[in-house]
Length: 102
Image (tube, rainbow, N blue to C red):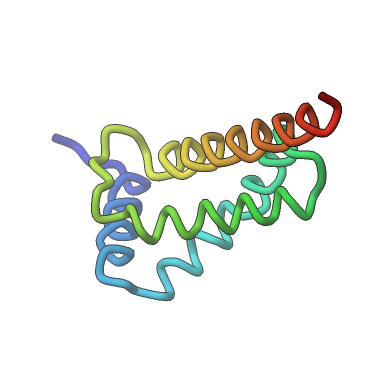
C-alpha cells in the first residue's frame, strides 16, 4: 500500500497527539483554528460564541484523539466535532429564545 507524504504526515501528527506532544497540538491549531471559527460562525449568533465553540472542539480533540479510528481524515474528524458542537450550541440558543417568547 502506497502512503502519500500527506497521509504519512497525518499519521505522525496523530501519534504525536496521542503521546501528548504539545508541538503537534499547536501545529494542528495553527492549521485549522481560523477555518473552525469561520465554520462555527455559520451556526451561532456571533464571533465570540464561534470562538468558544472552536475552543470546545479543541478540548474534544484532546479528549478523543485516543479513540480516533482513522475512518476519515483527521481534518474531517475535527470539523465533524465542531459542527456537532456548533449545532448543539445554536439549538440551545434557539430553545432559550423560544422560552422567553412563550
